[in-house]
Amino acid sequence: MKCLIIYYSLTNSTSQVAKSISIGLNQAGVETTLCNIKDDSPPNLDSYDLLGIGTPVYVYQIPINVLECIESLSKVKKIRSFAFLTYGTYAWNAGEFLKNTMLKSGFDIQGWFYCHGADYFLGYISRGCFASPGHPNADDLAKAQKFGYDMGSGNADRLWPESHISPPLIYRFEQMMLSRSLVQRYHQKQFKLDKEKCIRCDICVKGCPVHNLNHDNEGYPSWDSKCIMCLSCEMHCPREAIKSPMSTAMMNPIMNYNVKKIMRDPKIEKSKVRLHNGKIEIY
Image (cartoon, rainbow, N blue to C red; front, side, top):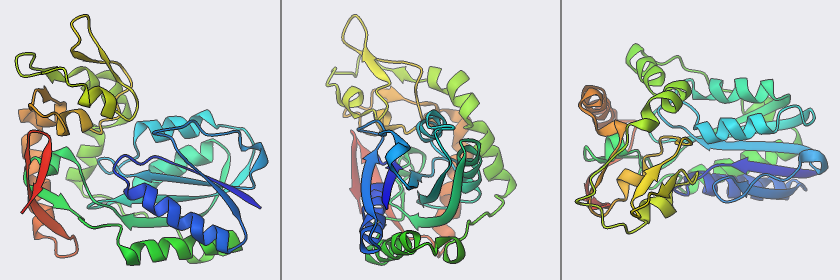
């Protein structure tokens, strides 16, 4: 049996989980290939018997590039599959977005794995809150390996069911505010560059996981129309020359509410941090 694991990982959390799942699959006698869509395009599915889809959770939903990747595989063939998600705070019903897209593409989902991952979301980091630092940890990865083994042995559908938790109203509002359609029609056009601060270092251009940044005639970064709202460009700018839609006054009440909720939740590990000139300093 052969398995292909297609996943997206920007900060390595989902990569670690994917690798641990592959170890479990190999232990079950399943030959496994890993493909991070940040770096490569998925191969043809025809030679695979099993498909895994892995993704982080962005604002309680699935990143646009992951959904588009699944849609590009649409109707290739019906294939037994599984899904895994990493999240820093709450996954809520994010799996539902992933499941709906996978089912429309004809995949037969037989197992789900959920895991905490270090949360480098700018909306929280810029407010001094780093959720789930150190995750996935050794225990998380051991569970991921067991999930892979069970999936390869044909037991995941019984042992690893889907989790669906309906989000409270404010989180549903956030999902709506940063939905795929609004990102594509509105938010991706709202990035601002302060040319007086920008030193044209190319960190933002090279760091964009979907190659959405190019250069204008003066060599300054300019944004195209493929943004997935990872906010890496603003996060890592060494001169703080970039302002994303997440840094607007409109988002302040929502982000402040979220950070207060995280800091008061004993189930979420967190560290206090400072973001300065593209570097995260942990207290």
